[in-house]
Image 1 (cartoon, protein in one colour):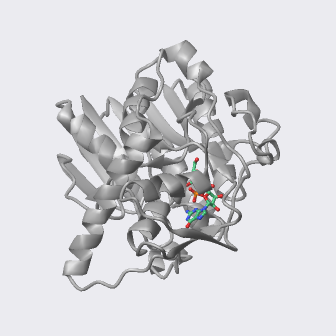
Image 2: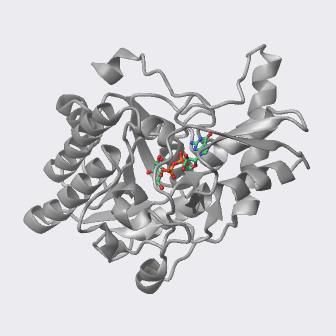
Length: 342
Ligand code: GKE
């Protein structure tokens, strides 16, 4: 098949391209940046800015009719980023989502996939610890994560209306905090799993690591291989409405840090500091995806985090050998690239 993956310079997009190439597909990649850690195996890589209609359409004009379009492009990151750049994220991602969807319609793509997020869920339902897992109907009445979450809901609805009004076959997954090798692990856009690994790796035993908040926040974290496999399942299935794609293995951030420490038997103390917290508790209810697609994630947090930990450790050793200084503590990213604020 001829397949387009936007956001192919990002973590999940790049891993999806690798899987599709391994399956023997013809894969066109598009992003304003190349993958951070390794070369893209795509048959062609359009280094374009999908916020602009012309640049987006040029891909479709040049490649012809796609069998599948996966729109994973967005300006996003972990809480350190999405809490500090709401206008930027919402403006950029609404433009990207709209341009890619419209081009897919105009050039008659056979199927369209959009990566939504657990941040689309009503935050009022995520205020308690040991909270109920989020099922798909809990996005409305709407009160999603500020900025980022509203763009996700907007784009979900746009996919629904393009299906209803134009007959475009659209599929939507709500990703729940995806992590793994090749994921961003420093610079401020990283999410908690990579952040905990980096902090533990860069802190000598008996030292201390910083944790935002009280560490009692709860999340579930889905390993990248499960995310890629579930994405293909949803794209190629017949269920047209948004589906959770996440792990239902609930973990407290304090315990996430303990798991990271266990890999090299480090005993570090936790220093609780101010930071962007997001919701108090969030988990994925996987009963609907199991019912409609017979699918559930298969990689445990311990297994996935260990792979991630030692991959990050390898990256750190490579950078250290190049004389790059590295910080354990998290930073809030300074967005200086002019395209982001253009
Ligand atoms: N990133 C990060 N870095 N989070 C930390 C840190 C740290 O050093 N220390 C503690 N935390 C806490 C955060 O305060 C938050 O309560 C929890 O870990 C998870 O933060 P996160 O992984 O950055 O992001 P969230 O799960 O809150 O939200 C993310 O959800 C995804 C979908 O599930 C979003 O930022 C998006 O990346 C995405 O929509």
